[in-house]
Image 1 (cartoon, rainbow, N blue to C red):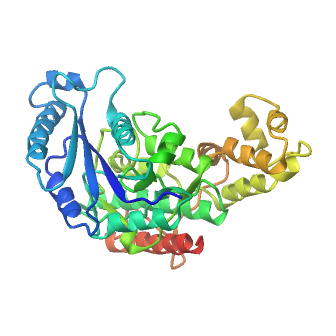
Image 2: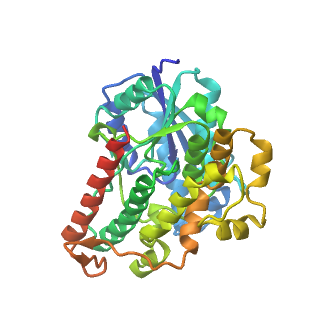
Image 3: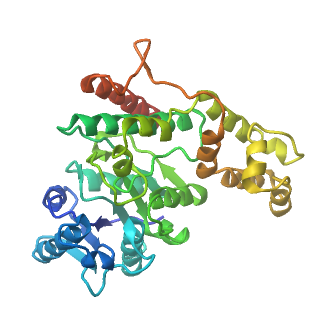
Length: 389
């Protein structure tokens, strides 16, 4: 088994000049020093043609200052990939954080040894002094692990509206993960670009990032779950603290979610009913039975419509002659994306979060009370993560 002794930190940057000093200070304080920082400073080329008052043109100037700032860093290994200057900025569909993450990870694995660990971060994220050391120790203690889905926690800001939206969205994510953990889903993880780590070998094995405008983290982690082991750490040393800031630079995720009105957040990101998750679990328990013969599962009607076929399982039986291989193939077909699509399709009334016997009103509740609800879910998640070990 490989022994991991070096970390490459992958950092996509777009208009992060104000955040970079704090991020670099976190890196300077790390107890583990054998790391390299890779930064992809990026934005589309046409942003240079925008009026000076336009935020996109201002992002170009911010990136230019960032390049100058990074060029003066001499106390750590920094590789800067410039995809923002006028002659090299993104053109066409090659743009966005998905491309930036792909460029970073691809560059790392091309030059790194086979024993490399890649830590994915965002510039607005903080973490403890032993974070990198703890990540490396995890992979060395569990050499079959492909990736870590690291715990995260968004600190409160001084803006009540942003905090209210952030708490509602984070509670949605934690409620969702807790139910996936409850039903022992193989896709029980939260994929955040600032809260991931994976080995270079695992990254090459799955073919790397699928470059998207958003959601690239989820699809990469899903690849890891299908081909290896995704582990969920539960210690304070392995926790990151991304800012809960408004952002329109990606189509979905925390930034664009909390930019929405609270009513729209609640509509787009409901607390799915527990019995819908139970349908998923019941379907998974029937996979061994399906190896012998077709039977209806709670998800069959949905899958026939989604996959546009009445023959859901026969092709898998033909290709996988052992029951265990067939069951694994079924789980790969009914993957994390299919589970989310199924939950969205269900007619079951959505749940409300309950505290002290009352439904939580995120529109009217006091921020300290809403934060207490978030903290309770965070504690439950950490306990559920620990139970996996």
